[in-house]
Image (cartoon, rainbow, N blue to C red; front, side, top):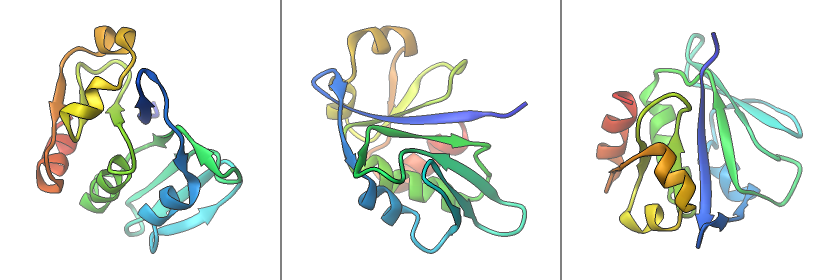
Length: 135
């Protein structure tokens, strides 16, 4: 079964646009394939993931990480992506979610907060990588 992890950005409860150019820069140097709707990233021959978003458009409100690999490099790049806006990382069926600041959690829609529970707040890259690896 395939696992998907989502990162979505919000501002005042509404989707927040992130520049596609900025999203791509988070993965600079590890993109192994690219289309209008996804990029494949590789951290070695057995550490690959597909990241879905509107690559061909100027902005998108988040990404879907399909089959997140276990390489710490992916977590570090997802942290960079989380810094682009008021982003929330979650996996359906899992309890909780990760944000990198209390402010990001405050921008989420109320019904999403109710559904996902309490946030884990990762104040820096090291904390984010640790939380992501235990998520």
